[in-house]
Image (tube, rainbow, N blue to C red; front, top):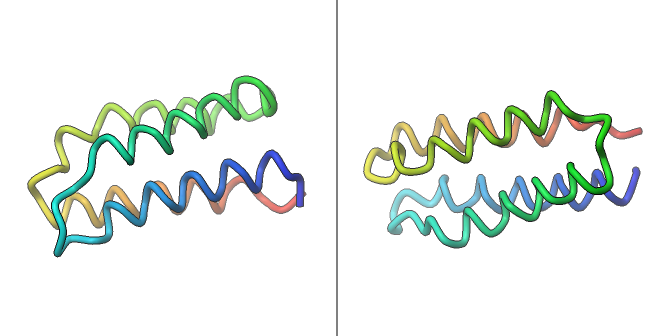
Length: 90
């Protein structure tokens, strides 16, 4: 697998993990760090993945909306994991 894609995938999975831990307060800062790392990787090393980067930006804007709702957090985490899976294995 392309190392850059693997880095993005791992950052996205880490962000999703924070959303799935509904027994803990949602840590916006950690989530934003991982999403920003993924965004930078998209911009600098995967410019051909524009559509996925745009989806990532949409998910970043939703963070404040999901903080206090466990169901929204789970759905958001699933979307982020789907984005990671869509990076493919090439």
